Image 1 (cartoon, rainbow, N blue to C red):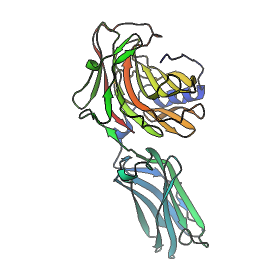
Image 2: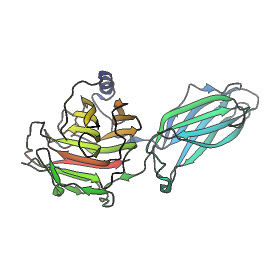
Image 3: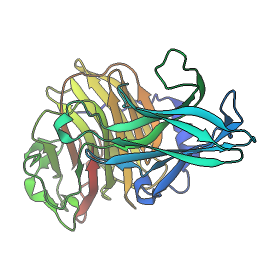
Amino acid sequence: MKKHLINACKILAILIFFVLIAGSCMDSFNDAAPEETFINNKDHQVIAGTDVVITGMLVSGSDYFPGDTVTARLNVLNKGSQVESFWLGCSISDPLGSWYDLPAKQISLEGSETNSVEFSWLVPEEGLGEQLVSGPYLLTMAAWSARPGNEEADRLATVEQKEAFFVVRYIEDFSSLNDELWEISSHSLGLGKLDPDNVKIEDEMLIITLPAGTYDGGQIESREFDHLYGSYRARIKMPDAPSSITGFFLYRSPDFYHEIDIEVVNDSSGPAWFTTYADGVVSNTCETYLGFDPTADFYEYRFDFYPGSVSFYVDGVLIITYDDGLTDTPMKLMINSWFPVWLEGIKPEQDAVTLVDWIKY
């Protein structure tokens, strides 16, 4: 899988990235996520035709799995002296645009009264997995003059958050290697080979070793070609092994036909490529620098792939989005560390290790 170094990137995306993360990059946002996150204020938006204002919208947690309950809350305040009555509705949209409408609630507020109105949504269980899409979900709440759906109902106010929470279909935490889902690769790649002996699970971590004095590496891949649309995230600490790379990607042979790829050079300078392949060619690529040392700590690498679009992120910061040149064929999910023929070919003087804390998709 020879990669072409293409320097032409969207400069704006790179500049935004450096402004946001230069100097010190945050740890994975999941590690620091509060139990309840304030996500929208709208400057105390007024509910039209009333003296009621919306003072905040909140959602509990960040990542949800099938069977979990998402709880959202809208805070309202009646700033007048008269009783005000209205309806509140709550809707949730998945990344593909499918909507889940929750039962509306009728609200009455006395003068100067505040209220906190809760809505709960049960993430569909695994039995509905074909319909469940991983990634960021949109949360919308609206105030209405009558029950939503009635002909006489007028929308009086709306608040929303585009990435209110994440739905995750599966997390691999590497307490062990799930042999039903993953296999360890064994074949030649680049200057060396992917050796199963270089892959192990230890201390709830996937460890891929680049042995001293060799060009060998390691890889795990999903057993099935069952990965297509969704959000893919991995928390990785790169090895200190210049002229090798670590990849987190979707792939299906033949080369250049089906691939969505994050690749990071395993040295402190942090060069990285965000690339797609389709119809036998490199359809999109961006070469940039991460702005931090990827070998010094764990960072989250992510791509969100949906029909007609793929977006790449590092620690929640958007790097680039491509809107064409994408495959629509199910692929395998893979993660590897190896020595490509198009870098210097420096053998490590001592064993270097890639550490993968988790993979979520």
